Length: 207
Image (tube, rainbow, N blue to C red; front, side):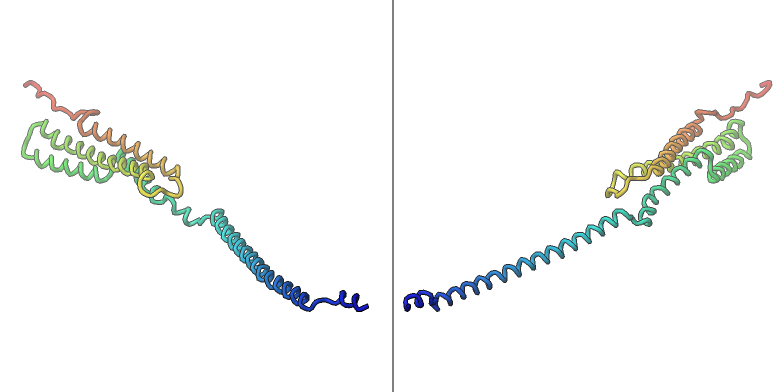
C-alpha cells in the first residue's frame, strides 16, 4: 500500500524544472514573434509608399504639362520663320535696297552734272544703283542662309533635348536655306552683270 502511494507522488524538483523550462520557452518565443510582426508591418508600409510613388510617376508620364509642350521648339520655330522671310526679301527686294539704289543714282547725277561721256553717265547713274541693289539683296540672302543652317544644326550641339525638333521647324528652315541660296546666286549674277549687261553707248552718227 505504501509502495503504490510513493510511486504516484511527483517529485517537487522535477515539477519546478518543467515549469521553468516552459516559462523560458514562452519568454524566448515572444520577442521573436514580436519582431516578425514588426518586420511585416514595416514591409507593408514600404510597399504602400512604393506603390504611391509609382502611381505618381505614372501620372506625370501620362499627363505631361501642356505649357511645357507648348513652349517646346518656340525659339527654333521663330528662327526658321525669320530665315524664310529673309529669303523672300532677298528675292523680291527690300525698301533698304531701293533707298540705297536711289542714293547711288543721285550721286551719279551729281558727278555727271558738269559733263561726262555717255558711258560714264550709264555707269554712274544706272550701273552703281544696279550693283547696290544686288549687294543689299545678297546680304539678306546670306542672312537667310545662315539663320536656316543654324536652326538645322542646332540639335547636334549642346545638351540633348527631351523631344526631337518638330518637323515643321525643319521644313521651314530648309525653305529658308533654299531661298537664301537662290537669292545669293541671283545677287552674284546681278552684281557681276552675268544675266543682263549694262547698256552701252552707241557710236556717234556721222563720226
